Image 1 (cartoon, rainbow, N blue to C red):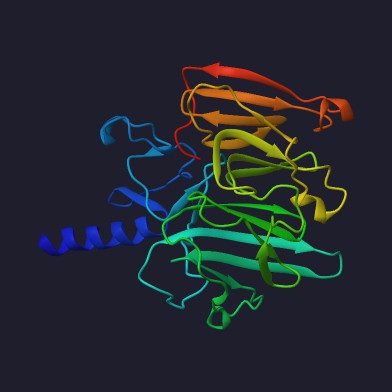
Image 2: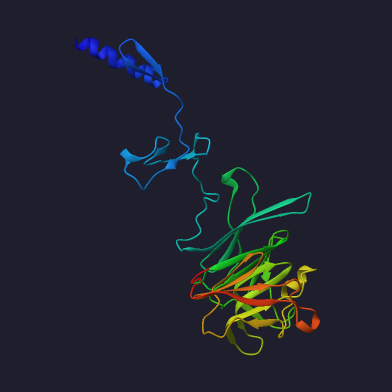
Length: 293
């Protein structure tokens, strides 16, 4: 009797492994395809979830067709250890001339800018190379790309804004006394409609003055040199409410965030009114905003 039961279990297990279930000894039924299209259900108890859902899932991806595939996970692009300090900025840049594609991974750690420009698929060849040092060690960064240039803004306002050229693989200061009417740095920045816009400003053209509710903008970027074309008059303040600008984004127009408000900058030509500027600043939301970028 025991041998008979063991034989039944073994046969049933073997058939089940190949898509069959032994309903009774000698009766076989094929299992229909199992649909996993519902994904994970964390709301209901495992005994109450729909047939096409799971109460837990690990290293799997389900799609709307109900099929599943393995999640491949992640790996380090650069295995090289730099320091035990927290990485404060990370950005992946791409640029194409049509015949040549440039790629660079940028990382800022403990006041230094590192770049990996390796294009090999062999991960062992990827290394960090230092491009700039001496930056504030305790600040976070925003990266914005325009063509072959990556602009870098640090939120301590203690450093000049940096510019990484992916073609020449070099880092320089973006706004200096020799190429701009004003010398400024900013916490937040964005490119919109071929203009470069900065917000939450530190102006050290003549002394040092902070304008945490100010927006500064460039001339039309018909040349990359105009990225630094800031002047004393090409600026405006966003509501005198005592709050600082905490970030910017763009959905059709430019949204400017403060802790308890959201304003929108719309324009076709961003310029002085006397020179044809048609910009308009409108408060979209009061009582709700953004406390961090």
